[in-house]
Length: 316
Image (tube, rainbow, N blue to C red; front, side, top):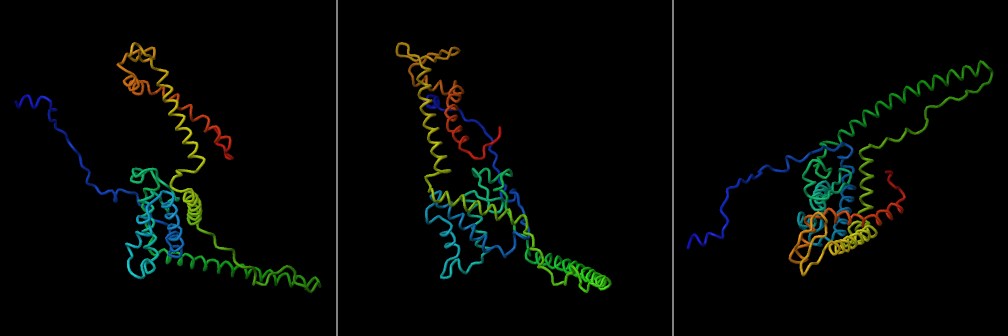
């Protein structure tokens, strides 16, 4: 009886299971922001921009109201004052972590989006980088600015001394010539100093944030039903419908009925099956490369229309 009962069971096999116990956080790439980007002078504006991007992405992807960033901040900072009493830097850090974990969005690294969680945990995506602010960034900026001001004052004083000397020489020459006028000198009061150049990293961050605000605002206006934009989603839907029609037609054209049975129509195959269900399974498994070639033709029309309507056509 025991032998008969064990006849239908699979024999046990030994297997080895490897479990990774390493924490993912230390393996993630870490980058320290520059002093200009880490400055507390831009924390409030960065927090407002990051919160706007998070709100747009929440609306675009249909995140429930009780799971959005605002609800999370209310849980983290309860009480009458709530988030108004919280530090702007702490609110910005929570918002950046929310963008990275929920929307796979990197605020400081070009406002980039990742396609999946595995990309975030890898080294190949900018979203996988964890950013740290530079300690005492404002003090470093002030010290650099003080050194630059001292250098500029020395250079200005030297230029003013040279200008005064040139003016005196011009005046002496004018008196010798009997003209009586000092020509072309400067009085040292001069024009205003040139404007301070903006940090390149700050400029890039501001440009990427402005672009992200614009793009996420369009996504929020379109709603969660739109994946990319209305025209792209319509083209994708058209391609999917065409691929489905091609699949049905291809299966029908490669089936041969023989006395209630079905035969594969490929000349080098010609296998006979009990009915069309088994034949279709065979076609999709053994001859799927021919089907993919036919379905690829469904992309030609939308791709050509998109290329014709593109103002910045890629060069082949």
